[in-house]
Image 1 (tube, rainbow, N blue to C red):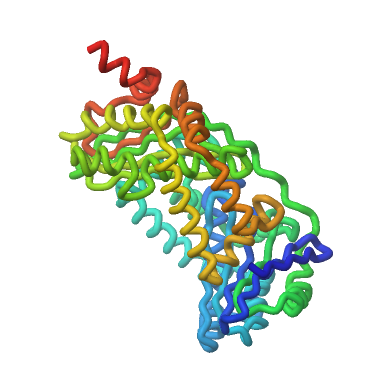
Image 2 (cartoon, one colour):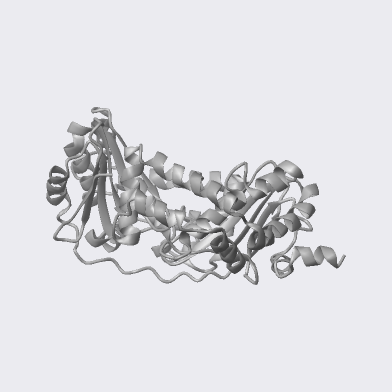
Length: 429
């Protein structure tokens, strides 16, 4: 990596990763704002603003924005997450000034035309409807809400039909002014990019953003809980979760590896035991979501009503077994998977730009691949077993199940079972 970083006078961080063999570049603006900073009445406004940024400025129409970038073979897009929003472009090296100008324009001069707003609200209502029609999408939304009830981090990124329909131009302008502050923004580029030239563009186009940082979001408090919805579906969607670790936790890499060992691929414990050996579901996997101050360890499976009764106890037994029997061989395999994913991402300028921008927002600096690899390599099987015990045993679980879920194990029963050693339980039967 050839990373260079400059902080402008207003606090905006400009970072580049030059890849001399390329003729193209990926660049974007990453902002430390997402759905978790929203009030109840604002739920969904971050995502709506991301959509509306492309719908016209004082000098460009929505169609003009699309035609201008595509006339040089480039592309524009954006995304919203729980903690970050980003607007990005892919272009040829010589078209970097155009891409920077468009990104700066849409974030400082958007008009939020009433007709465009009405159309985009309608589009997002369709997006919400599509998510509600998808059992697994709905299950994940309910899972997040059950883990962090009555908190912004637990509310859906898309918002609700009621909140989305209630936003107007003034609300969007107020949110933009409140959250889009230079100290909370990173302008990043990777590929065919010259750092000094990129900094000069940033200084010219982004120097007008406020130098005052935005207010910090409220602290997240994991509580856990249960949401069971009986619906006439072919399969039951089941999600089980536990409090995880934030990005800066000393156990961040350990819990990432734990997720990989348990359900990170076809060789993982859950896949081999539950899918391959017993055929209780088509697919099963585990994951870990990290945030600035909290995290969520989870696993997802889809199964028939007939297999649900056998699936849940088997999952809990695998979770408990992880506290005792994870081996160095399994950890080495998972380390290799994570390290390979990291190295493969370095081949993509878009992935590189996103990685260095997020690292600055999270850690305040760029973590090189060697540093990350050394942290991954330092994790031992004993570390994984300890983290598994701390995560599962005596913990408050989050349980969400949608579909034919009559008779499913409850969260309380799940918690009780995780207090019992399966070896001792079998011996007493």
